[in-house]
Amino acid sequence: MAISKKKNTPVEKGANTWSGRFDEPVSELVQRYTASIDFDRRLADHDIQGSLAHARMLSDAGIIDANDLAAIESGLGRIRDEIRNGEFVWRLDLEDVHLNIEKRLTTLIGDAGKRLHTARSRNDQVATDVRLYLRASIDDIVRLIRAMQHALLDLAEQHVDTVMPGFTHLQVAQPVVFGHHLMAYFEMLKRDTERLSDCRRRMNKLPLGAAALAGTSYPINREMVAAQLGFDGVCENSLDAVSDRDFAIEFCACAALIMTHLSRLSEELILWMNPLFGFIELADRFCTGSSIMPQKKNPDVPELVRGKTGRVNGHLVALLMLMKAQPLAYNKDNQEDKEPLFDTVDTLTDTLRIYADMLTGVRVKPGAMRQAAMRGYATATDLADYLAKKGLPFREAHEAVAQAVNFADKCGRDLSALTLPELRNFSPLIDNDIFAVLTLEGSINSRNHIGGTAPAQVRAAVSRARKSLS
Ligand code: ARG
Image (cartoon, rainbow, N blue to C red; front, side, top):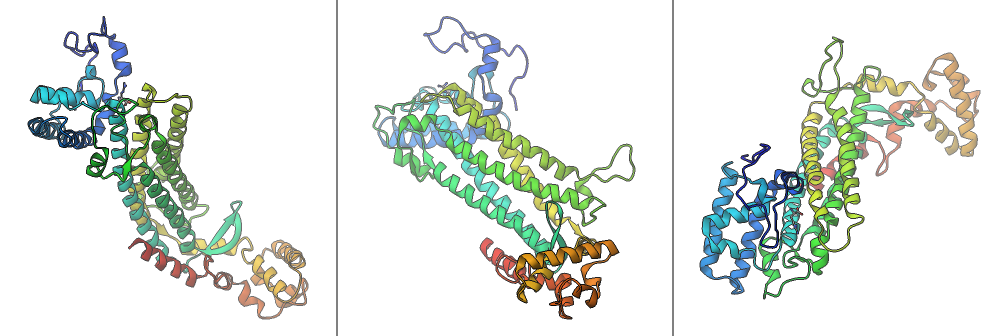
């Protein structure tokens, strides 16, 4: 882009004084400090979209004439092309995206360009632009989440029978199937999508018409602008319309949760690919080596997802802090909403994109998972349940099994490797049918209800999930 990063950006004499109201221009430092053009030019397309809708309404309401509208439409069309082709010259002395575009329009079409700003202010303009930008970003993000859900489903479907240890406190707890574990993340992403669409629905109201803060004396038609821009309605209080950034905070909260979910999965991928677990391998394209230790394959991508989650969660806090002491209505503080917001969108978008691909490159090692499930007495609860079902109060069953585990541990054997007489030392209720119960398959198959880890249930969960995506 053509923005000048040079220290002494040539500025037309007087171009950076606001008006006859000012006796001197701002210093170069103040100009740089107050300008947002370096980052808000990403709103250009939405700014033009908003201006076109506003201009059509002005003309429809008889506030500008048809010739002005035609000139504005062709001028803004040309500016859109200039920006897309990288020919547009962004000027720091024109502060932000709105003034840059307006100035260029006036240069191109003269007085008609100067009439565009009738009945609006940059305050309602920027609030509109950000909503349009974020609405489009949410639609992209929802699509990316969906792609990742498909990748999760594909992997889960291949592993409805793959037994692994389920953990609590990161200690072996009970056997589960890998597909069930993956489907937990599907559920998280499903809630994330619901949250985003809820956030989108609340965001989808038009601020334009609020003008600076109090509305405008022109006979505007806000519903017409709203309809053109695809908003479901208008913001119903002008002060709120220009000062509200709830929608940005809500979005960042949604994003923080999504990243938190991806960070948890990343942590698991990192653990699972550690050779001490050895449950999975990640495709090489997501790993890097070490410059000194030739044996290393480091899970850099999941580690960075974990790291970037801190950054995105920080942006949420930044926006909350930005808003917490602002009196109504618009304050320049609000200009600071953009960088955290844009970075949140970029980081989340890249992370989701990378994740869908990374999941397709996960190589699962069922043997290692199974071995790990065999260690750690994962079926101890099944033995306790067996005794309880035979009439022993669960607390007593728990104690009997605790003793059996202690014994097995001392002999270095699994519960299923104890003989019947050995097992009966801990409870005479134990019979030959216990051995089916103590196997990994016996354990997982017994958890056969909705939400349980039985392969039949996981298969059903995958197919319900597929339907919900189609
Ligand atoms: N660049 C400004 C922002 O992002 C636009 C609104 C400026 N309004 C004002 N009254 N100075 O918030």
